[in-house]
Image 1 (cartoon, rainbow, N blue to C red):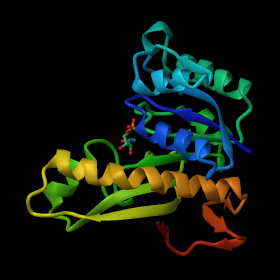
Image 2: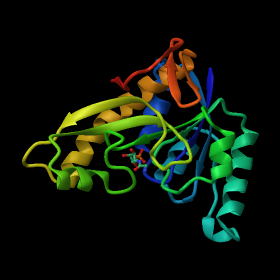
Image 3: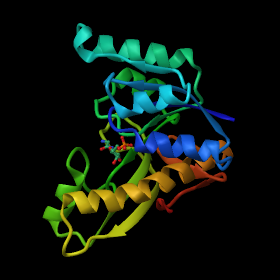
Amino acid sequence: PLRLAVLASGRGSNLQAILDAIGDGVLDAEVVGVFSDRPASGAIERARRVGVPAVALRPAEFTDRADFDAALFDAIARVQPDIIVCAGYMRLLGAAQVEAWHGRMINIHPSLLPLFKGLRTHEQALASGALEHGASVHFVTAELDGGPVLAQARVAVVPSDDTASLAARVLDREHPLLVSALQLFAARRVRLDGSSVMVDGQPLSRPLQL
Ligand code: GAR
């Protein structure tokens, strides 16, 4: 099975989707560790509930960002993951760590990248008047939310939407999107070649629509 390290800061519903897919036998993977910058996060609680090793480090207890990132990634390296999955991890990652894990670290982002990078993506989408919104799974590179996109899921924006309704509609699609993307990794069908996403040995010309 594919060894996954999951980084999460928040409620952990994407982590839960991964754990459920593994439990249901539809994802040939193992979550070998959950890592967080927030000890009180739902993600840490979900991991502990099912006996997955969970490590939470408090940024305030480190002298600086580099020191924190070094400790975090030392802990990650100890569980020897094949890939790192950022599932609602809300801190910037260190450049050295991003470089070291090039092609082996993915992120789920709640927008149709390259649209609406950064925070408050649902607000950004509503403010832009977009008729469509969604989520993307992409490889992590030095550029925030700027790495090559593997797969996306689209939802319609409806006139009655507010950020909460839109976020909920997107989140519903994030869970199967992330699981489907990980199934491709588990089947060893995806890799990154420089900045090209390769699926079944062919470069992707546009993100998979899942
Ligand atoms: C998800 O919507 C994820 O796409 C987003 O945070 C949420 C985490 O939810 N990630 C980002 O915004 C990354 N910048 P969860 O904790 O329930 O999985």
